[in-house]
Length: 240
Ligand code: AMP
Ligand code: AMP
View 1 (cartoon, rainbow, N blue to C red):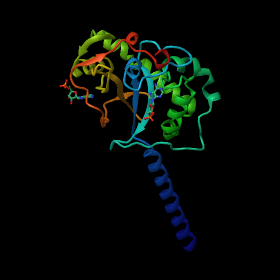
View 2 (spheres, protein in one colour):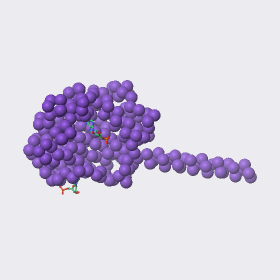
View 3 (cartoon, helix red, strand yellow):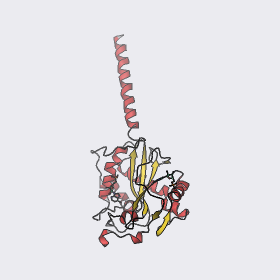
View 4 (spheres, helix red, strand yellow):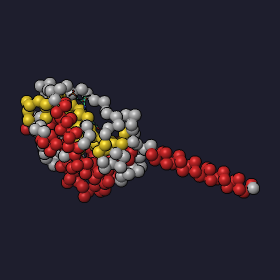
């Protein structure tokens, strides 16, 4: 009788611990923001930029990061200091990362510092689904899937200085191609024009499928006259 009761208590405790474990795994995060940026807009803003050591980036969107988020709009960060960025784990991806995930911070870098920052601040908060190389591979694959440059070009929106688009036109072009509305973050060039700076898309908790955004990020307002500036007008600080 006593043994039976003890056995039952033990079972209840084990089940309880399992429930807590499952709940805490499920709560690691709810979805991702996949954030791409328009390098020319990073560079022609007041802060300026420095082209990477590997050269001037292509006139295309580039990756900023894949960020775990909660549906209440908050997000976890720096989740595991015991799993720091290790270059050797992405050595086979380096040439692709240099092209698709270029650093623009000054002074010029090779990208490792930027990738380290993204993995340690955001990637370590999705360790239940990604190891380090898996995190970078997932973002690269999402960039290919989104193909924002193509989506915009199909709607007649091409990089050009002095040509303006409405928020509705930009959003519709991406929504039509991807199936879900993005969030557009703008910044301001030296003439005070608003321009596309970053595009946020929501991705399911497996990191592979675009979804409707459960919550939109807060960002600076864009206005309704938005440029997608050409790279040629942007200069890096090293060239000034
Ligand atoms: P995060 O901390 O991931 O939210 O990203 C914000 C930080 O990333 C800021 O310090 C930015 O200055 C930096 N950042 C954004 N884009 C780039 C880029 N292309 N290269 C280097 N740093 C960047
Ligand atoms: P509008 O072209 O200003 O009528 O905006 C079209 C839709 O975009 C509205 O539903 C706005 O709420 C929404 N919207 C406004 N700012 C942004 C933004 N930065 N990113 C995504 N959607 C936005």
